[in-house]
Length: 180
Image 1 (cartoon, one colour):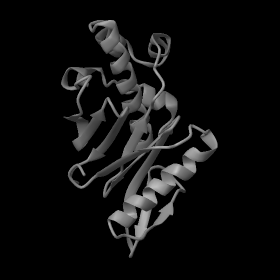
Image 2: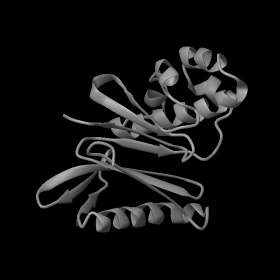
Image 3: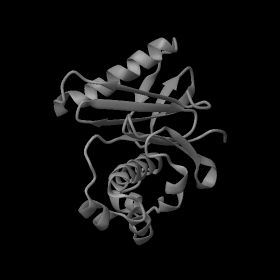
Image 4: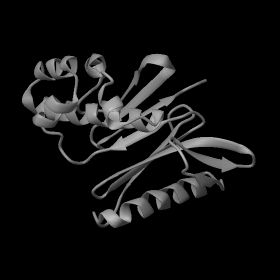
């Protein structure tokens, strides 16, 4: 738990894409059971909502290969887990000029980790705001790279009261608010 946000992840026994959606919802059931909560999932718009006793919280899901993750928060939130490497060619195509220049200032092995983190942050932003790929890729997270460890989990302040939680070894990043 980070503030009032709950982040959970799990590994599947198979990387079968047809099982990913079921696996992340099973993870939600495990988390809700652990919290002794019952809630209905509303998937009609991003971010998704959990409805219980006339109240709602927000939930975001992600999956990549054999990994699934979720975040639950009283405020809109987004999460992304990405186990595939983000190539330099993809970064050149989708990241902004400032981000690519910032990436070039790091050794190549660190660049690979930061490319993955930038991609995760952009995907989490898309889920948080319900935006399109183009809108999410247009957000510049390059200014935050100096505050992010390529080897340890980090929590950083973003604009508009948002926080980002980055866990490189779990290959996940989440964006959420601590308070309204």
